[in-house]
Image (tube, rainbow, N blue to C red; front, side, top):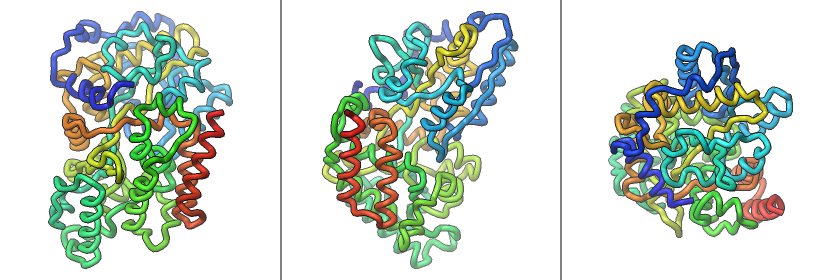
Length: 443
């Protein structure tokens, strides 16, 4: 997979440059005839809770233009294990027509059900580097959701009130200094009048094993592996930057409301961290990405507009950086009827290449598109702008967790981190156990 900086720079640049590939000609209307004239029902099983309502609105807009197509959407995510839920869904015999895959490991796991999308119009509009992870033998099996970035999302107002200049936070040492300064001012009551609910610097949702086992670990493993494909082909994991990962986990735990009883962090979920955490200014920093903007906006638009992203610095590695990549891909199930497959492909084409669909993607989903042709639609949200800033500065690292062995990130490393936080095992045991399980799962 090509360098992430180039991948995402092209994605965001495409919002500003006029595409020379003729997308406007093919996106003015979707190929409604491809869905056929007979009534078709599409069942979509997807993971993005942050835009579930907006996706349903998009589906209604599509059906309004294609009255023969009815779309049902089921969303599982935000704390639930989407992969496990998808397996259960398919085993029940109620197979979705459109579902999500994460990358090379998922392509391997679901190969028998994936429709070849290589001939779809949007494929030629994909920015460089977003398709190799879902391409096998020159066949493309997934359509990229978007480009996303994550790091330490923080409240600029709280930092300003504490006299902390976020521009000076470029490595772990400066991050730690800022956290200690903020912690002292919270404890002293200095910020109480302006931020009465503020009780701690961080909130760490260790219950969400994807936050720790996938995203947090990627900050370290994204510097050990060059891409998701390299991670997918790796027979072992060295944890070269394991100490840096430990430092990031410890910093969040030690300056959280549960600092005196860290096992309680294993009960903290996404909603507590986001909607009941940073959105109400109960905490100042959380490890999350630009996808939370809509959730925070629904709680407090002023707070959402005052968010930004700090780097996720790994000591000994590239510190002034955030991980950037494609979160998931849309896949079409070949077990559906021919008319369902055609309608599924047409809906995805409409969603990402029609004027109506693009408006949903950028202005309602708050996505940074992974396709060209969005020159008139630039991201307007604060966190999308923050990701853009890191990309343009070349301060990114790749997403490699899509190449982890199936279940390893969440159900091995994520659970090991929970044991570490509760005091059940030492960090060195966490590393050894996770290394052994990776090697076992790669046999």
